[in-house]
Every structure is written in structure tokens, then in C-alpha cells.
Image 1: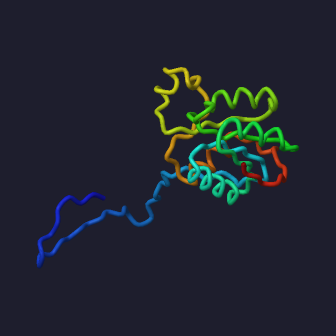
Image 2: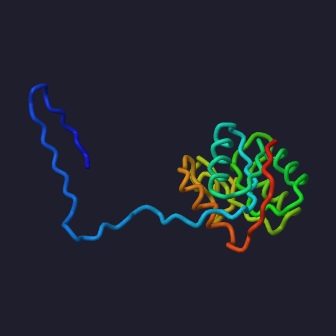
Image 3: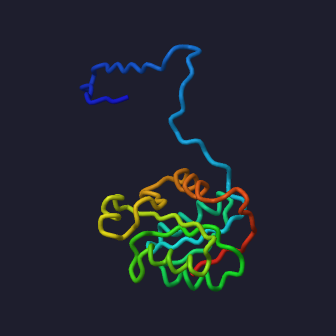
Length: 170
């Protein structure tokens, strides 16, 4: 519904909204929510503190164990100090000190079973044409909703990846 006119004081404004017919099915255009996490470990690498905090909170509430780091070097340190598996690296693409792609390459050398999901506010063509990301990588576009985040993470994780791991932040 869109309304571009304003009624003057004392005038009556009538708005009609067509809801459909009785008995007619309404199609839900929202994405179907994925099942909640089951303790899979997600390593979040994000240099923006507020976004890192809210992302971590959403993932924890979604049933994931979260390791959190303020950048690439810190993420590699967290990973080195974590004994259990890291099922997913969720990393910002552009961070000071180390690009997300470089972080992913280094982490995958140490933990080849880890899946990777990039997040960025930059358009995909900009990232791929500048060589920052390879075409076809999994990417979550910023800004995103909590549902977008949980769905994107769930899409990357195999259902069989279940563990309980402590949460940590660096």
C-alpha cells in the first residue's frame, strides 16, 4: 500500500486496502526459516564492534556456539586456541590488516573442513572485479536481518555438524 496525498485539517481521508477474497490463500513471500542451530561452532570475524556483537548475539540465540574476533589475525589466534571443530567462518570481506579472503585461505589450510560465508556491504561485482573475492563464493549482503543471517548460516552447515563448544571473544 502506498499513500502520497495528505488530507488537509478537517477533511476526511479514505484509504481502501484490498485484502483478497475470503478463502483465498495468501502466499508467504518471506523465506522459510531454517531449523535452529544445534551447537555448531561459528567463528565470526568482523572489525565493526557493534555489528560483531549483534551478529554474535543473533547466532547464539539461534543455537550456535560462537567464537568472535575483531579481525583476521585475531580470528586465526582464536581458531588456534580452540580445541573443537569450527564448522563455519563468517567473515567480513574488507577488514583492516587482513582481507576476509586471506583469512579464509589461511584458516582453511589449518581446518580444511570449515565452511566459509563472507559478509559485505559492497556489491558482488565490485568485489569480484577487484579480485577481493572469487566469483561464486557464498556471501551475505549487509545490511541483513536476523532471519537473513540465520538462514545464510544454516544453508552453509551440514545438518550432521553438531557439537557443544564454549563461547569466546577476542
